[in-house]
Length: 226
Image (tube, rainbow, N blue to C red; front, side, top):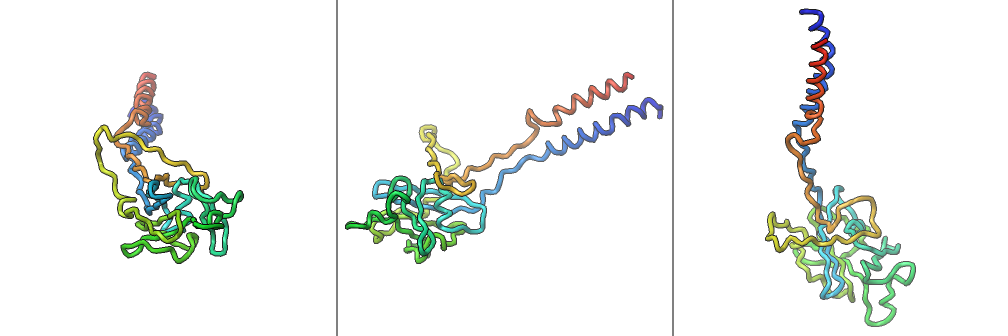
């Protein structure tokens, strides 16, 4: 082999290796992320106002209070003997720090936030506080504003039901997602409906291979002419 040819090959070696690495990296599409665990959350402010949220989380389980905080709703809580008491959700209830958590039970009729869990096909009054509740994938919790005697009326099977794959053009209006004012570090907006991550396939316009390939060819041509 001629010395000039060997010199060109030695100079092109690192460039060819880099080009091959870029081609291999670009050939592997970025897959969609797994959705993780999901739990339903129902907030019944009154007979004419209900929020149904599907909250996603990566943990094996989380507390009922954490599920409520991850919903993205504005939540007011107060520490109590059994953990925390939910005083206010959005604009309904008693504002902690400004008034007692049970401010609307100082006279009749009494109204407060009652905690329910969907269990064995029926709504059950939560025997423990929300901080002692272990919420797992597929569970459904509900908070009802009232006298504590009325169970939720919302169908829990509709909370985390799969959305249809297509919809008529007239039904494509976006729904606003409530913002959180008291949330721990990141989620599952909530509406806690998780948005599916899209996957990237093929070679995009910004693929490193498409940028390095012309540079490698130009470099090889320049070295060959020397």
